[in-house]
Length: 84
Image 1 (cartoon, rainbow, N blue to C red):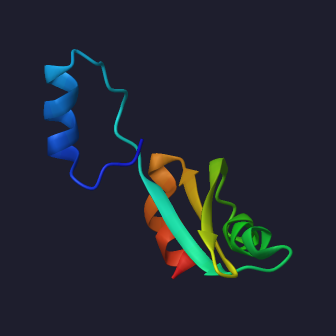
Image 2: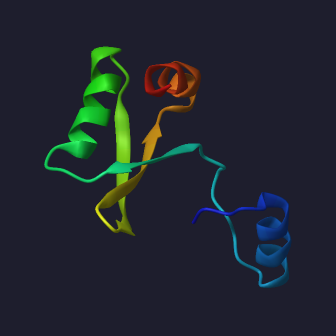
């Protein structure tokens, strides 16, 4: 679950008595869709020896792609630099 407002999410979860897991960081990537588009982004991370543990594809439409990419918390800063 990705929340625009994490405080609001926590409040709603508490009211509904839903236990949330640990907060995690994900990178939202988008671009022009073509074969291998996400693989190119992942290759940038691999080149810096950054392990990706989850990729969630998103529907972008109109010839665009989207994905959420998660890396280990200790690699977030390095990943941000590699993806910049």
